[in-house]
Image (cartoon, rainbow over all chains, first blue to last red; front, side, top):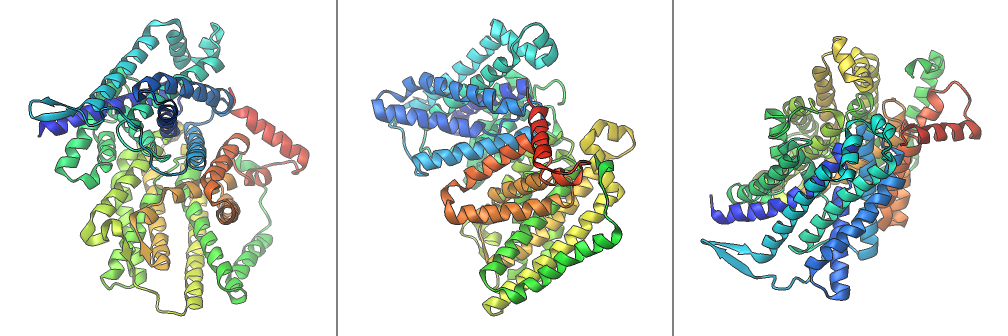
Length: 286
Length: 333
C-alpha cells in the first residue's frame, strides 16, 4: 500500500466527513434523509466561485460567507418548505428532497450554465514532501478546515443551550414542545447548520477541482454511505466513516482500477449492510 | 381505505377493460410515425410504473434502483443478441439475470427500513452502471454497444415495437392484478401499513419483499431488453439513466401509488406533460418535474386516483379543495 494513496485518501476523507456530518445531523434530528445535500454543496461551491471571481479574495476566506449563505438557504428551505411534510413517512420526505435537489440543480444550470468552472486558488501547485509522498498544500488546508468545522459542530451540539434544544427535539418532539422549545425554528436552524456544513464542504471541494451544477450528484448517497459505515447517530462514527471512505476510494482506485473509483463506496455500503448493518460505531439498528 | 372501494358491476368492468385495449390495438393502423412512437414510449413508461408499483406502491419500499435493472436488461439483451441469440430468448435470459441479481442483493438490503432501502437501491444501480461501463470486452465500456438492427421497413419497426410493448404491458397489468388480489399483494400492503405488526401476524416480510423485488426486477429487465432492441444503440449513461427512475417514480406517485389504475393514469399524464416540456422548455425539464414531485407530496400524497376511487362523496370543486387542504395539514409541523 503506497503512502501516497493513504495520504490522498485521508485528505479526501476529511471533506467526506464534513459532508456526512451535516447529513447525519439532519437525518438524526428531523428523520429526513436529505437527498438535496449534494445540491446544497454545489451552491456552496458556486458561492465561493462567485465571491472569489468578483472580489478577488482568497477562496479560503469565502468559507464563512458561503456557510452563512447556505445557512440562510437551509433555514428558509426547512421553515417554509420542508416543515410542510416533516411528519410524512421517511420515503415521502426522501422523494420530496429529491424533488428539491432536481429544482436546485436545474436552477443552477439555467443561471450559470452547465459549463465547468475553476476557482482561482493561489499557490495551487504547492506541495510538501512527506517522506516520499507529495502532500498538496491546498488539500492539507481543506482537510484541516474540514476537521475543524466538524469538531466545532460537535462542541456546539454538546455544550450550548441551543444544542441541547436540538437534542431534546431529537429525543422526544412532544416533550420538547412542552418545555418550550420552538420546534419550527429549532428544525429550521438545524437544517440551516446542516446546509452550512454542506456549503463549507462545497467551498472546500471547489478549491480542489473544477465545479459544475452536477458537482453534488453523488455526494448525498456518499454521505448516506458514510453514515451507515460509521454508524448512525454517532459523531465519531461519521468522522471515522468519512476518513475510511476516502481511504478506500483512493486505495481501491490504485489497486482495482480508476474506473471503479466511484463504485467502491457504494459496493462497500452494500457490503456493510450485509455484514454489520449498524455500522462500525453504531449502537442500535434504526 | 380499501374497504371504501366501490366496485363496478362485472359487465361494465369487462367493457371498461375491452374498450381501451381495442383502441390500443387499432391505434397504429390509423396513425403512423411520431404518434405511434410516442404511444410506444407512453406504454413503456406505464408498464415500468406498473412494475415499480408492486414494491413501491403496495409495500411502500420505493426503489431508486429501477435504472439499474433497466440497464441490466438492456445490456444483457444486447450482449446476448450480439452472440447471435434470438431477441426473445435474450430478453428472457436478461430478465433471469436481473432476477438473480435482485435475489442476491435483495436479501441484505430489504432488511433495511424503507428510506434506507431507497438509498441502498440507488447505490446498487450505481454499482451496476460502473460494472457495465468497466467491462470493456463484453459491454463495449463507455463507448456503448450496438445491437443488431431490426430487419424491417421503418413503419414496420414502429408497429412491431408498439405491439410488442403493448403485449408486455397487458401481460404485466394482468400480473399486477393477480398480485394485487393474491396473498402476496395483501402481505405487501400489510407491510406498508405496519411492518412489525405484519411480521407478528405471521407474514414472512423478508420473503414477501424479496419475491416482489425479484418479480419486478425480472419484468423490468425483460421490457428494457425490448427497449434496447428498439434503440439499437445503448451506452452506460442512456441505459442506466437515473432520470428514467425518477420519471417512473413521479408517474406512480402522481397517479397514485398502491393502486392498479394509478400508474396508468400517472404514466399517461406525466409522459404527455414531459413530452410537452421536452419540446418547449428543454432546459427546465428537470426542475418542472421536481416541482410536480414536491407539489404531489404536499397536496396529493396518495395521487390523483385517490380523488376518484376511494371517496364516498362526489368530487366537486368544494370537496377537491377540502381534500387538498386535508392533505396539506396532514404532514405539517
